[in-house]
Length: 103
Image (cartoon, rainbow, N blue to C red; front, side, top):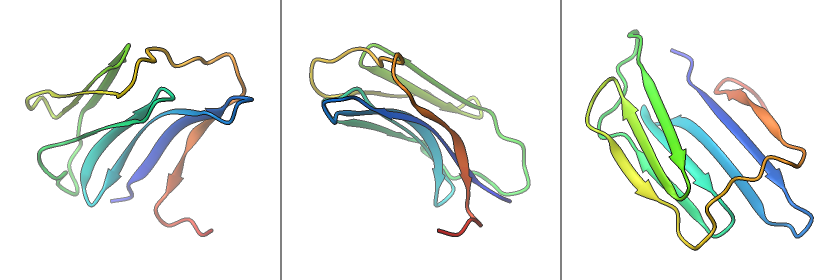
């Protein structure tokens, strides 16, 4: 099974990085987002099983985040600080990195 990382991130003129991504790390699904005041990391409660189709839902509203994998219970989290928005008015990158890629 080839697992990938999907991300959207950008840098503001003041060098603040804001990002939202989900990735599979050691067969756990993680939702990570940073609105500028620090990262929130939500991690699935169980590992993905190879060879099966999985349904992943990730949501973010203001500072609150939610991750749901295969209809299991919701994993909820909140980003630190006071920032609530992910400003998409600047240049960004959206894509994935296959595990078998080289640097």
